[in-house]
Length: 560
Image (cartoon, rainbow, N blue to C red):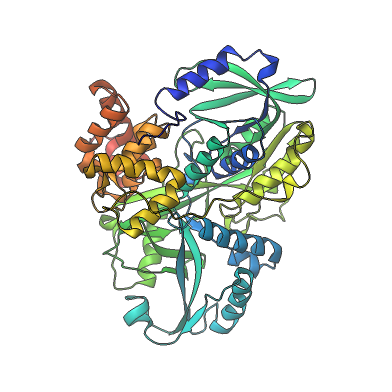
């Protein structure tokens, strides 16, 4: 059995781009929507719009999920912070969306239990925390919270700081692979007739009198420029929101804030829960949690001043900050830089009034004081959206479509704009006897109806159903991505379609003979292309997913 869809195959991208370039001046090629940005927000708008029958083009200047949406904290959470600040409606929406995603995408969005220790004289006390969680559970329609006064260090959280510990509360949120969630959403939009292209940059807006009527695009692979036209444009570029709005003369609104994480082997800090606690220095909430067979420590919250045209990277102060946090909460761990397998940094596109020309000194100064809700602007046919949470991406998408509806010639009814699409909750019995029920659940969650094609590939070559080293990722997932997920570069494959570049030491270097074979067989890369991609990938891993000390050695030429 083979996948009959040619979308995102090796030749598909070139064919679609050639058609766009050839038809750029034809009035009958006008799109209903052009979406700029291939992160979770843009993907959400894409999926909802195509599901409603609109003709939609999505373009992403780098790779799908290249920005924040592959480098978030991986949490699908309701937002206790919102409850604490009295934002009940926002918290309620978030909790319900969390529940929906867990119900619809098991294997991709999974429950993650949390533990919060309570210490004598410290906030939060168990009584007030229980009252807050009672509201949280009521919104979810299920009781998750449970209080423990015994067995915390010996059973629940081995190694946790015991001094002044009076108890711990367990509650629940969810965790995901954010990049795979983006891909799952984009695939759904593809199946509904949309067109999504990576490595295509929007460089300018086109206007018909004062209304935005389209975009000038640039193919990042060939350098060719061409125009496309639409009834409305959606600017869902996150950290880059201000760039496209600047072509319309709009002021900056985004305050980029960096959040960084450390990846360490799970054996160095074994945890079955996400352990939440407050950093001893600044009392910010931080956490340690299990993800994809490793342990993650996060996160920071700093103004991001690194170049917006390159990937973000952790700095020395952030490494020390996160190690200090983990060692304070687990005083016997003695974690050092030698334990760190990888790092990642994402940039949150926080909407801040402080970015306006007229600065109000009474507005939030500390990054952690900024609000995280999404905001939307209608600039005469270009709808820009920024901020918000991964959890509520579908609700944000519908808000965008409501704003765009007046430009769509009556194509959307009010009833269309008051619902969101859903994923079919079908855990099919995949055609493979070699996979465990958990592995099948994982494939179903990540690939939906396409999971059966991965299994058929594996049935044709049983080696492809083997796990890649110590990860849960199967070799067939690399093959599938090369065949059907618009992989243009090696980092697309190893850092976003799969995460083995984060989960294994040195970006997975020990497996590169096998990876080379996959890329040459399914992407058609010759030795020259492989060498170029290998060097490009190693540079990205060294400078953006490793420790600063390794980055500095590489810049001095002391390591390859």
